[in-house]
Length: 133
Image (spheres, helix red, strand yellow):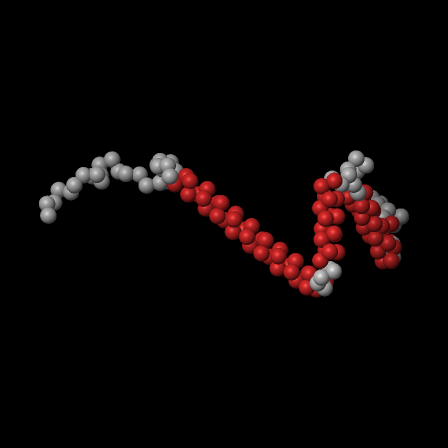
């Protein structure tokens, strides 16, 4: 103790050398990593669905089969180009479907609440104008 009345004893962290502080910090990190590893581990009842296994094995068979005819780099390039084209087609179809969904509500007349054009009560939109030509 420091000998001054009312003071608390120093904590071990205040008098610990820097190496001990680093070890304490690493042990905290290690504990957090162990906890994360425990929480990320699959539960006992969790199993991979048969559909995922079938897709994996089918894809593996296709890659091995294609490697008989073309080299690995060409296969990787073709796979990348195929993925880019797939994403482009997918986004195009999504945009087309969203445009058709937007066009469907336009077929019905809009009301004042929906922000559509509303005719004024006193307007003569359907009548001839007073001027004769």
